[in-house]
Length: 423
Image (cartoon, rainbow, N blue to C red; front, side):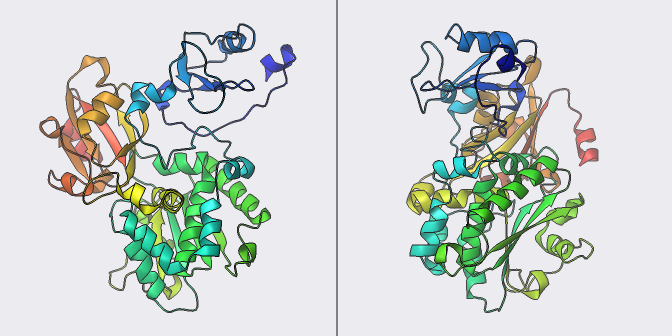
């Protein structure tokens, strides 16, 4: 702001969410009219004038701290690498994180300009709830919260359950140590999540939705609240949405940080104002859940995939992944690795590719010891299994699980007794 004022430059300053490359933050992007957007890494306040001078005055981005340029929109800079060719991004495939760190999360107009809510409007005007469930089932999307239950199948059970009221819940509780995927998606692209929830609500005849989110995520709550307000103002939530006869109200419920409330029945108890304690199943929530009514509960990442499936078609989603698990999975890569951050990879990518190709290997040249995946319910995968493909079934064979997506890397100096004690 100071630089723009001093140099009498007319420019918009936009705060965006996390692009995922956490170890390179803070990031500073500059986009001139008609020119590709260029990104600088580790941009401190002291170096901001030099970085901006290089773009505004010399018209050539400063090489030091240069991360790369975005490939879409505008003339490309000469001798500036493309961001998607950077080792951290090259092997990633982004559906869920597609717009995170790129769009203004507080602007519904920008979301709509990039195709946002197009899938939802198509669904409520041209498809039956059963057809939506069929498409989601055909895509092979499985719940990304850890259990991996087929999403379309869950929705069909709720659709066939007869009731005067049904509910849909987005689980954004995210209690696993080392996990920050849902937080970043809600902070960086809240409308994508809302669109997924709205499509799910239509698919099961639910008139009310809850987003159960950690109170420790104040920015995510703030951005989500603004997104809901703007969606209502545009007629995308509320009564008789765009003359379709479909009504939907979305309510934010903040959790108090109890790890157990990530479990679906405990979470529902919490929404009802009770102590967060799991209930025995059956009956399953899709038959009898919140307030005794049929309820579908999916996590943030699951809902964020839904608009992409409805827009691109289930076949293109199903073409990615392994035989038993389709699409991509977002992981929060942290610990003793050179490049930390959010990683979205096709399911079936090997652990070695994630740690070494995307993560840049172990810090300080030390030896790899293990990766902890799946939070307290998961397990540690040692070096002997580093070539394992990351999917729901394969991880179980080595005593771990996919979980929600925390991936904590450990080096030869890590004490496994301490790790076990912590978890």
